[in-house]
Amino acid sequence: MTLDVEAVRKDFPILSREVHGKPLVYLDSANSAQKPQAVIDAEADFYAQHYANVARAVHTLGSEATNAFEGARDKVAAFLNAPSRDEIIFTANITAALNLLAYSFSNASTFPGADQFRLGPGDEVVVTEMEHHSNLVPWQLLCQRTGATFRWIPIHGDGPNSGRLVESAIDEVITERTKIVSFVYQSNALGTINPVERIIARAKAVGAYTIVDAAQAAPHLPLDVQALGADFVAFTGHKLYGPSGVGVLWGRYELLAAMPPFLGGGEMIETVSMQGTTYAEPPHRFEAGTPMIAQAVALGAAVDYVTGLGMHDIREHEQALTAYALDALQTVPDLSIIGPSTPVDRGATISFAIKGVHPHDVAQLLDEDGIAVRAGHHCARPVCVRYGVPATTRASFGIYTTTAEIDALVAGVRRVQEVFAR
Image 1 (tube, rainbow, N blue to C red):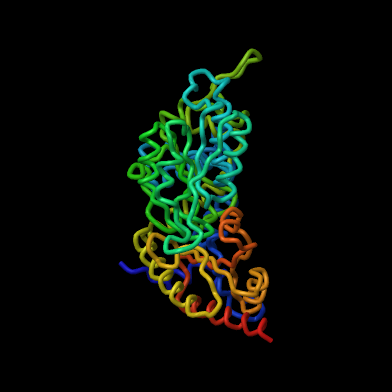
Image 2: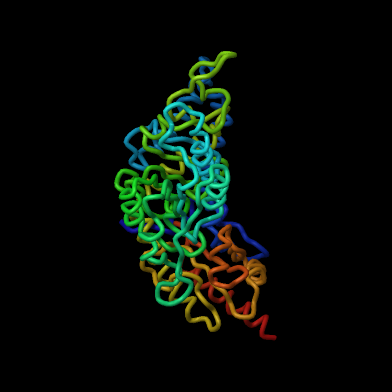
């Protein structure tokens, strides 16, 4: 089945509005995707008709809220093909999910039976050079707290492999000293889709834990945690056409059951006394306090929405868009693609630079034409350093993006060049 983009667009009320008197062309989905009416309605209906706290009340509203919240957990588990719903942890976003892991690992030294997670001098944590800051800073902090060493797999900054990992470095950087390998599935700055299976296989061979940042993968391609073989996978709701304020951490149950908690408080406990505390089983061990109830319910609606469209069809639609956009943008003089210039193993995110024009100026002038893109280092500053640029302009696509909108982007870029040529 082919994705009916025009029908999809009708589900997103914001796409009918104008900006500066021009039809909105929204090309910033990698930053945050827009929301279909079904998601907006799900959150509004929960607040209007079913709101109460979860797992704390026996009254009708409390039961309805708990059922809706736990129902969302079931939907996410099915979306990821997780073996158990108890492997799904709701967090505030993917940043919170990655910090949860990093701080839980650093708590291992004081948690009974958690020696397998303990890090110290001589141990190494490996990431890649294309990571979002959310998958860099928590691990740098963990290494500072524990004395472990922070390492990374570099990327090619030019040539035919521009924007891709240096293949030989995977085996060189991931060694018997490696304890954690945390890496992005699809780069938010480059669009690169990494060789996930290859990295996980190497990490397994040396006994390291693997963590996959799937923030940019979850909205764009099928995710099957059992097929991936990773130990942990995380994504965020607002990029998956869901609300902000909710994210997901999936982990193998046997690891979660042995892992120390990060936050302490209500709901994550088994028993509490003045002498000490014992902790609940996963996932509640990692969901201290009142959770993001309405947001999780709306995320469940977003999962229903994309599942109904079909993740394989979404992937095919966006592959075609990416190929079309790469070809179109490369017809523009003095425009450089930052990252892979072909659609092979890449997602629907394209960063570029225009000679003589700062990316912020590009974005501002495009906005005057109603075209929303992002300019900056996209919370991936090491990528800009690798390419020797202060920032890039980034256009990113979603299920509602059309080739006509890409044509508008290209025409807008040409107008920007005309303005700066005067």
